[in-house]
Amino acid sequence: MSFFNTIQKYDPQQVIDTIEAMTATDVQRALAAEQLDNCDFMALLSPAAEDFLEEMAQKAHAITLRRFGRTILLYAPLYLSNECHNSCLYCGFSVNNPIPRRTLTLDEIERDARILHDQGFRHILLLTGEAPGKVGNDFIAAAAKRIRPLFSSISIEVYPMETAGYQEMVDAGVDGLTIYQETYDPELYKQLHPSGRKRNYNFRLETPERAGKAGLRRIGIGFLLGLGDFRSEAFFAGLHGRYLMHHYWRTLLSVSFPRLRPAEGGFQPPNPVSDRQFVQLMCAMRLLLHDAGLVLSTRESAELRDNLLPLGITQMSAGSCTAPGGYAEENSATEQFAIDDDRTPAEIAEILQARGYDPVWKDWDGAFLQKETG
Image (cartoon, rainbow, N blue to C red; front, side, top):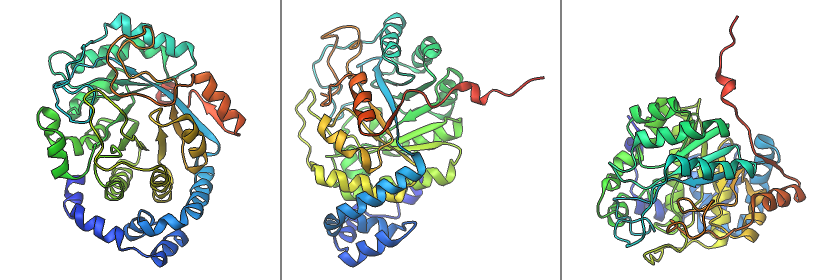
C-alpha cells in the first residue's frame, strides 16, 4: 500500500465540486476544530473561507508559535546542472528549450558552496535536471561528499531515485529530499510532461516513500501553484503530508509553496494563484499540519515574503540563484526560473530580526546521530 492507493479513491473534479459547495457554517466548524478532518480542510480551502482569512491567519500564527517559536531556518539552493531530458512545458530547463547547458565540475561546485558557506549558510539544497548518463547518482553523491565539511545539512531536489539510490545519498552525507509532485491531477500531469522519465506519475508520487524507507531525515513536498486548481491540489498535498507523517514519523516533513515564475519557453500558468489565495492556502495547510515546516522561496516578492512571516512560515531561501555556477559568475548559464526577492542573505536576516524573528543558519548536526563510545 502506498499513497497512490489513497489518492485513487478521489476524483479531482469531484474534490473541486465538494470544496466549492462548502458554506460559511462549514468554515466556522473547521475553525473551531482542534484537529481537522478532510471535510474541515476542504472547508478552509473553499471560496467561502475567503471571508475568514483573518481568523485563519490568527489561528495559523498561534499554532506556529506553539510548535516552532519565532525561528526561521535559512537555506540556499545550489544548482549543479541544467542538463535535462524531460520536456516539462513549464520549466526553463526543458529539453525543448534551446538554452546553453552546463554541468559544474566538483571544483566549481565547491567554489559556489564556499561562497554560500561564507555568507553564513549551513543548510544547502542541491538541484539538477534529469539527464541520465550526464548527471547521475554517483555525480550527486560525489558533490555531496565534496562539500559535506562545509554544511551541517545537505538536501537534494533532483530526479526521483529508487530506494537504493537514496541510501547511496544518505551514505554520502545527504539528509534531506525535496520533491514536488508538480500536479496531483494525473491527466493534467500527462499533458504537462509529454516525454522523458518524469512522465511516470506513479513513480514520482511514491518518491517520498522510497526516501523515507532509505532513512532520509527531512522530506519536503509540494505542488506548482498555477498548474491545476489550487484548491484541489492543496487538498491532495495535505492528504499526502498526513500520509507521510503517519507512515514515516521519524522524518521531518515540510511543505513548499512554489508559485510559477517566468522562465525560458514562455509558459503561461493556466490557473494563476492570487496573493489572497496564496494566504488562504498557507493558513489552511498550517491548520491541517501543525508540525510540518512551511517553506517560502525567493520566487515571491520581498514585500509579500515579509508579510507572510506570521502565517506559519518556518523556512526561507535567501540570496538564491537558479543557474549553475551563478554564485561565482555572472551570466553563467540559463536559470531555471526568475527569482523575485533578490535581497542578500544578510539583508533578509536583518529584516527577520527587525520583525522579532530569529534567523537560524544551523539547526542540525550529524554528530547528533553518533553513538557514544566507551
